[in-house]
Length: 260
Image 1 (tube, rainbow, N blue to C red):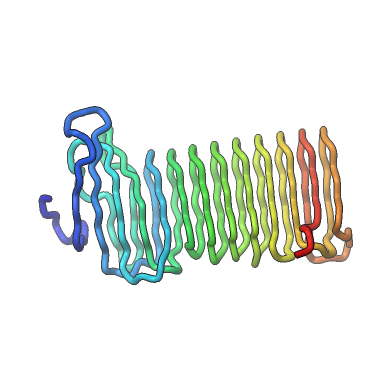
Image 2: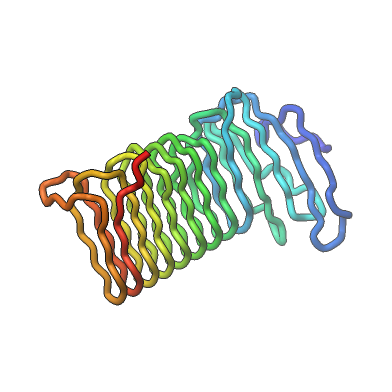
């Protein structure tokens, strides 16, 4: 592989594999890079491309890139201090998808226009997506996701979640350590807390289902057209933990989780 200026891209143990014949439609190149810098933040940007980040007890960062073009576009990421900046854009008719293995505690933020995003074991996440699905698992801090079109799943989070979508289903499952706000214009909303906290769940068109640990909450529930039900919890106007559930068209349910 042709060497690149160190100032533009720091590579250690890089490799390249041609996955499809050069010159054909759908040609792909794969690059596998290892960065010795201990990355603490990943900042993403670009148009179309998938991004997957998982963490493990390592000090370096391993970056696998699939470039959808029949020639090497050159650097598509850079390191600034301990921040890794990635872009899914690489020129005319060229996109990049990433699979990144990073040290535990890495934070992820940024915005993509089109593509799927999967995060596992990050600290915090603050991402926006125009079109695509988002899955965030095992975050140790707060998660914020905004999407125009696509499903959003936040699971096993330890720091609460704020989720907003225009079209798609929204799920925040097994969330502890912080409140949950989940809003969608068209789609279903499912929220399940594993520790007592506040929930705000809203949809214009769709069903809302909220499951919380048994206890006392200040409850607000409403539907424009649909059934509403509250079961297994105490409605206490003085409680600091608030559950607001509203849907314009659809059913709304608030219930206590089954006893362990």
